[in-house]
Amino acid sequence: MVTPNALPQAALVQIRSGLTERTGLAPQDWVLEARVLERMRALNIAEAAHYAEALGSRTELTALVELLRVGETRFYRHESQMRAVLELALPAMRLGNGPAKVWSAGCATGEEAYTLAMLLSRGLEGHRTIRVVASDISPASLERAKTGIYREAALGKLPSSYHNSLERTSDGNIRVAEAIRGLVDFEERNLATGGYPGSFDLIFCRNVLIYFEEAAKDAALRRLVRALKPGAFLFLGYSESLRDVAGLEVVSSGECKVYRRKLDSDAAQNRPSASYRTLTPVPPPIAGRPSSAESILVSLQGEYSDGSRLEAELGAAFRRTPKRIVVDLDGADYLGQETAEVLRSLRDQAKSRGIALRWSATREGHLRFLRRHNLQIDGAAL
Image (cartoon, rainbow, N blue to C red; front, top):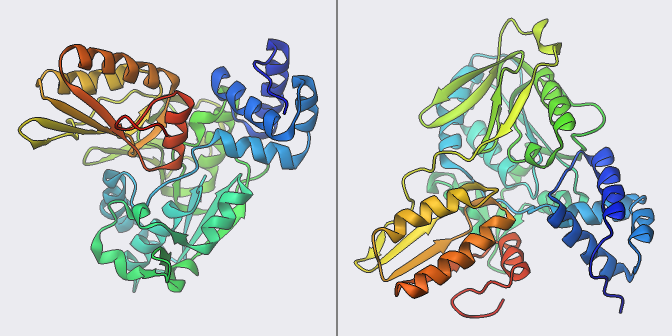
């Protein structure tokens, strides 16, 4: 078996260039190298230059993109944004005419799209019908999404009042009811190339642009603005923020910031003045709470692209001097390389202070992260 150890820099640059040109994705070097090496081993390719040639095929490009993405989500993810849909977007959508159009851009395995279909079909009942367009670059994710079948863990924080839109399968999984599945149209779409659908009342594009290089982000943002109706809403990820984007204004709902296309933006929207950034947001109050007098649970939420946010959240837990801290990784949308380094460092500090530091995960993407960095769950190898 061929086991390449590292990629020559020139080959990495060539592979990155081809990937970015065709998909807009711009992963960190260490992530790209690890994924390419994994694909080279799978294909029994020893030379990086040969893999760069293989990447010219659509099949291999799709396989690499699959590895670069976490690709697993949950229903009702980021509760504050779901509340903003109900409290901010829904009242405005009731005033419209004709079918309400919603786009879940970067829908992964479909949980987001089905959640929006559940919320809005009920909220707009008697006012407007609803159609949800759900797009993704991954054919495999789309095929899974079309089945509407998920593990029960995917329910997340979906309120029980919506559980009547789900059915139990014979093997113990759950399936989205046919009435909701029928509201969603899945399609393969690359946000970095080609045209966008349009005239949407609401667009969700969460944690997609964080993987794009700057020029692709700017182009995608302008297209997203054009895809919105005047007065319509754009939702980005928990840790994504826009500044000075022509045609958009910021509106707030509780702790959530949402973007709305200005009513007079038709002429202004084509100016290339978009500015995008990924924030390390001010962490919410520690999601952890003492589950006993001696134990603290810290639940991660959103983006952890570097180690600073994790250090701050766990540092606050350390200051309470518990005997045990458990870190739940499943709420994190992205875990950067420095996150693993912070976990190792804090584990050593915890050991010296007599604190048991553990982490837990059930999502496949996060389990891969732990395996890749030789971390363990409660002392057991993954």
